[in-house]
Length: 347
Ligand code: SAM
Ligand code: FES
Image 1 (cartoon, protein in one colour):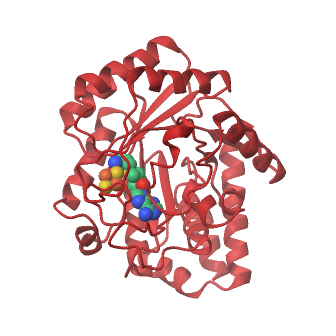
Image 2 (cartoon, protein in one colour):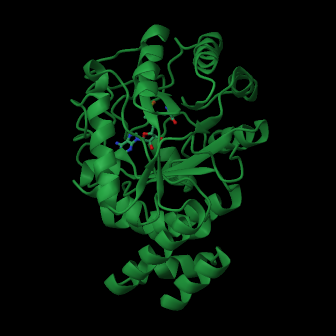
């Protein structure tokens, strides 16, 4: 196994067969070896810096029905909310005072936010703060819509591909098309966004072979960011009683992505932190170099309930900022509050 990890470390590519062999046969010693190599790659490209993104969950209305997701349209238990433009700008003000220079605007696919409304929000943020990056994460749109967002000043777009197994994708996403998801990612890249793809770990019936497909797809797409998080069941969804992903498997996949795409921006996700009290720290040690503390108003935090047991739902933005900083420093890394662009896009 060490020879395969060395090969991946040197050439940043491995055949599907060898990736599968790694996933199937990693013992404890080789797992540590993999994490050490991944961490070394991250240090080489981004030093010991961890980039902070302020996450604003601005709507939990969604027209989609992804069967794992707590804010899917069929979930009648979800307590719906949306933030006004002023409320979003207020979150940015609070974030700016705390030093954040990237805002991630995430939400369900909510038709209330027409192109004009999104463009107006993005433009207002970019006009107010000249030195910030705006990331959008609001799902599948047409090329023309993405282009409007980009022209308004949006810098980045997160759209996980969720799984590169077509059959699993179709089972999890009623009335959605895998091909359209990929079309969106390709359009976003062509327009010029810094693009984030990514997948969940531990979905029902997901196999190591499926992860190999995810890894090879990411290598081919070469996104600037990759979001990998464990699937965590949500009690009001059809997958409420499924098992969910593990911290261990998620960290292995983070390390493999770091070695395949050494320059990628890789978050230690809130879902990882929700599964284990030290989950995000473990993610950082496996090669992650981004965290996304919450800037959403505390009165809506619990309502953005994608999965059960989500952390930080009661904490003020300032508290989250301090808490995560302590965790990062204790793990031997340093907080970096700059925009944190991908190395190929650094200004
Ligand atoms: N609507 C946008 C989209 O589809 O990209 C952004 C919002 S969506 C809620 C953000 C991410 O949450 C998804 O890409 C998915 O991977 C993740 N997610 C949703 N339900 C989850 C669950 N039960 N466990 C872990 N992650 C989940
Ligand atoms: Fe739309 Fe989850 S089903 S955000």
